[in-house]
Length: 151
Image 1 (cartoon, helix red, strand yellow):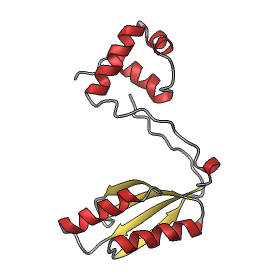
Image 2 (cartoon, helix red, strand yellow):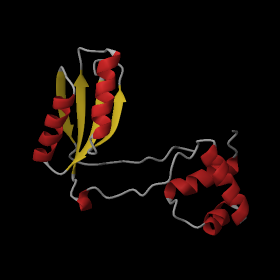
Image 3 (tube, one colour):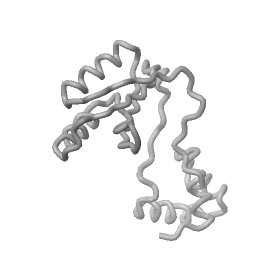
């Protein structure tokens, strides 16, 4: 699929507020309601738009502590990776898991309510998969957090 300038404008609007009506989005990108709907559907079918979600305020919901968990492992086998994937995917506090280059093997981003909640997450993770070296860094101030792709 070729993404043109109108698609980029449409995607920018959706990244800012996907709850806007088709009429409002279309007006902002100079498209009719039907043309706007067709383009959004095409972008969804092509997988450019993966899904539309609501972004929640973690602090207001009692999850005020963001933690980055740094993991090194001695085991790089397929079976270990399968177990690690299953473990991290099953824990709802874990929001992102990334396989890394360099000294670090994996980086996990999680949202917890406090240090005790982090400890429960940590204990649950190490019960499910063998880890060689685990350290954590806790966010003191969120300066920027976005999911918007620069268009």
